[in-house]
Structure formats: C-alpha cells, structure tokens
Image 1 (cartoon, rainbow, N blue to C red):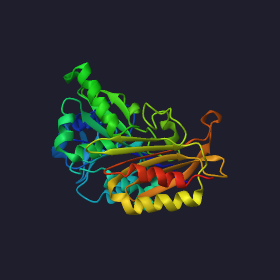
Image 2: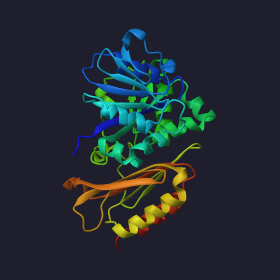
Image 3: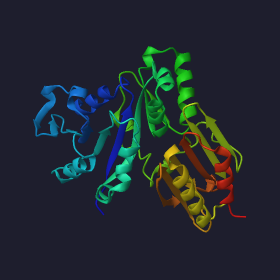
Image 4: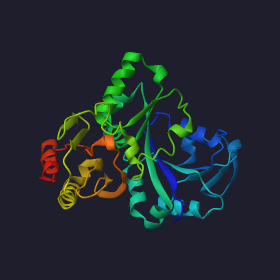
Length: 328
C-alpha cells in the first residue's frame, strides 16, 4: 500500500495568527518538505524573495516547501500535488473564508483516491487569547472552529493576564473537552508539536488518552458528562460493559442520520463484545468510519468512551441510546 501523506487542516478566526504560522512553515529551515494549500496569496503576504518558481497555482519556496492557492477544487489541487516529483512530509490546508472546517475534512473521507494517498492527521485551530471570548459572543463560526479542533494553538498569550488566560482555557475546555492546547506568542512553536500528530488518524487516535475526555477523565462506569456552552454542547459517555456491535451500529447510524447536521464531531474508543482489539470510531457530521486499532492495555479494563460535540445535543437521549447498546 502507498504510504499515506498526513494532512493538517488549519483554521482559526481572522487575526488569530494563521498568517504568522503559515509564513513560519514556508520560510523556516525546518528540514521538512511541506505542501501548503491556501486560499489566496494576497491574504497571507508571502515575501516575494521566498518564492523560487511558480505557475498559476503552485509556488516553490526556498526551503523546499511549496505553496498552492485554492482557486480551484481542493481534490484537483491535491491530485496535482500527488503527481509532482519528490515526496512531501505533510500537507497543510488553510481554510480561510470557510467558517466550518467540516467540508475540508470531509474531502479526506469522501474521495477514494485522496483517501488512499493521504490521511487526515488533525484539525489545528489558532485562537487569539485576547479576543476569543468576544468572538464567541458575536460569531458562531468561532465556536465551530474550536469545537472541531484536535489541536488548539492558543496564541497571543502575552496580551492577557494569567487570570484571563485561565478563564479563556476554561471556556475552550467547555466547548471542546478533549482538545490538546498549546500556549504561544506569535505562533512560536516547534512544528513537530502541531503537525503529524495523528489525532484524527483512526490508527493512532488512542494516543489521545488521557486527553480523550478532557482533564476530568476519571469517572464511574456508565457515567455521562455533559458540558454545556451557549454556543456548543459536549456529551461524554463511558461504560465498563461491552457493547453489542449490531446494536451500536444501528444506534449510531440513526443518531448521525437524524442529528448529523448538529453534530460537528464524534469520537470513540469502544469495547465491542467478542473482540480483543479496541474499536476506534469517529464522525464528521453524517460521515463516519471505524476500525479496530490494536489490543487493549491491561490497565485500561476495556472501558468504552464516546464523545459528541455539537449544538443542541440531547444529552439524555444519547445516554439512553448508548446504554441500550450495552450487553446485558
């Protein structure tokens, strides 16, 4: 099988620092070869002396990276990249102008050729520590971007007090309890901490523990945690009882078909009856996939955990439905 190239989807509200991060990827001597897909060059202001050669959509950078514009179709752009000579370490797709990262993420579920050659590695959201609370009040898109993230770059932390920073982090955790958060100034962070993280990859999603249910992940068997925010809901479910595979598939498919538009993300590590390996499940709106991903560690006691993030989630109905999938 062809080795899959990891793809990171980069999102974040205007002014959060995406431009700064992209320019670092394209200009630093990090020794990696990245392909960066952006909407328009005018928006990110790449210095002309960084550009080695260009055709209409692909610009080659001095450090070996290349930069593309998404004037055309994303699948076509990626197809063109994959035909180029030379291997990429990773692809970074910026979603400026797209309020919801889901359409970009779904590209890597939906197109068979793209799915075969690439893997959606993580969704990275850049957040402005100084202004994010205001953005959450006046823009539902800001909440979408935070809820969708696997990794958050909490940027401009030098512009707020320690108490303000703690309040911001509490708010971010209320929206997305299992996200990994990095604090930065001017997006200064080692790229190996934010790229190729495997946090959207089914085979490595289990590495999310203990962040999988946020900081407070020690809870009783069969418990539900419900984080409510006026812009977003998060429901975390767990049980020590094995799940009936048929019942779970029927239930989760019903949930996604009926409530998919309001569910941004769902992730689970599940103990299916009569299976020795962990079953890893995730969904983006109505699109889902699952696979077995290695044996259970003895210490884990095979507890199933499932998280939903979205709007107007019926926490009690999700709890009852999840409970109905448990073996007697």
